[in-house]
Length: 143
Length: 136
Image 1 (cartoon, each protein chain N blue to C red):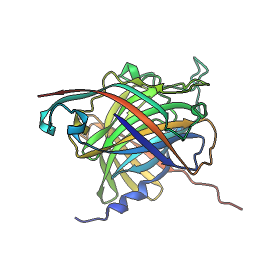
Image 2 (image 1 turned 60 degrees about the vertical axis):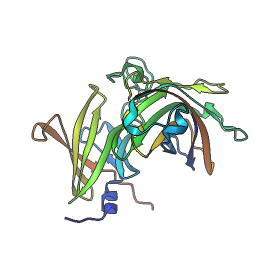
Image 3 (image 1 turned 120 degrees about the horizontal axis):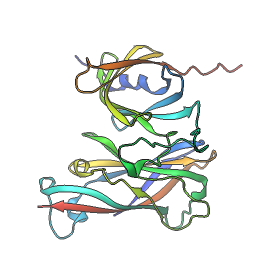
């Protein structure tokens, strides 16, 4: 799945948060079957990467690290992927290290939840806003 | 008892635990409150000379996460009467996560209780709101 995380500036040196509200639609997630929440046995993240949106290039060398979480009303915030450090002169899709233990099952049983991407800015940045593409590969077990 | 959910927003701000080794910014995400480390008295690991990372995290794959910027307070819900509960507090020095409640004693003082199991078996720390110097 590909989603867009957005944030409004200005950004000050240190951690700044980008948000992406996600409305759970299991039928588009798994095209083979019209799933209901009760059908889900487990959801895990297998791959995660970040990259610029087409036509809106972001210089990733301005960030020192990245951390991706999910947050929902009825489930605890969970860290699901990180990258530290982000290497200089990185371009294209930047792969994050995925948590080996994090479970996404509970959040996918909600009607909606939020992906929260924290990017650690090396210096202040006075842009009005910024958007970044999140590319996620999920492993879904279901009945 | 009824209360306005916005009353819980008085928790938002920058707070300093009693040990003085960190400052924690509490913010609201959705309907819950979270606190991340925004300042460290000793930002670098004395062994490596590099910025401290979460090397005690029980999830080994997450151990390169920087401590500065880390959310140590998670999922607090305002329950009225100057109390926030149902949250957790993470201690990066040992990698343990504790159930936690927050009680605001006055506008600038928090009692933050961390516990395992029942609240009676735990420890309370006093946090002070960061006072910004007045502009001349």
